[in-house]
Amino acid sequence: MKIRTIIATTCTAYVFLIAGALDSEAQSVTKNFEAAIPNIPGKSLIALEVNYAPGAASPSHTHAKSAFIYAYVISGAIESKVNDGETRIYRAGERWSEPPGATHSISRNASKTEPAKLLAVFVLDANDNPLTTPIK
Image (cartoon, rainbow, N blue to C red):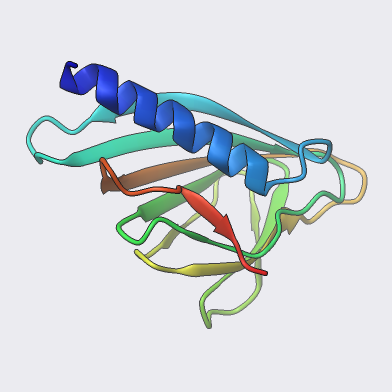
């Protein structure tokens, strides 16, 4: 099996795993991009779009242990809290990052009337999964 096929299959599985961790009626997750990082063996880049309906929220969760995440608000406003950081509302054009092993205790649309869209870019070990694990 070629490495690209393995990576593509793994990344597709990640999308379904993160989608399963979210309330499918309140938000949708769409894979935007995936690729092995050619000059860093064993590392992959995955970009996901997360669309939040008005008032929608993701459950508290952690990400894959090796995942460094860059989050960018495309539209609307997202309320977020990572680890022991402050709870903050990010508006379109604003961004934050999450270190490997972070706990994302708050991730929700800050508006009860308008949708919001977030681009989440993951840099992680190619075999590190699941991508997202809900905190019970």
